[in-house]
Length: 87
Image 1 (cartoon, rainbow, N blue to C red):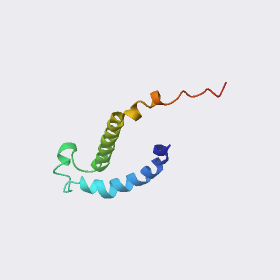
Image 2: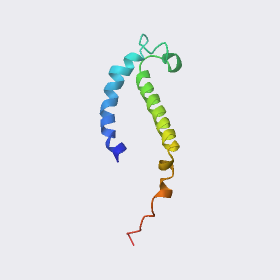
Image 3: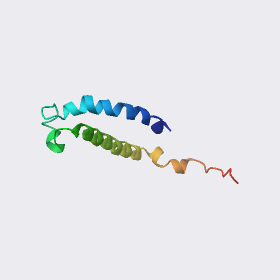
Image 4: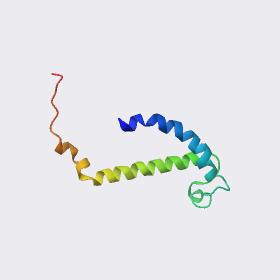
């Protein structure tokens, strides 16, 4: 529920963040052109591509950290069975 409720905020922030922050960083003469730009290239559209790469890496990292937390990984074993109230 928390993740779903934050989606509208993410949609509102992503466009301006890409246009005003990441696109200038990934321009031909941008600050990241000689580091990250060597890997993914520079020019139009590379800023939003960098955002996608950062968000993908953070999703993988979050999943790995959550897996290392045994209480979260084994939550089904700790919770009592749910009653079937529809019958």
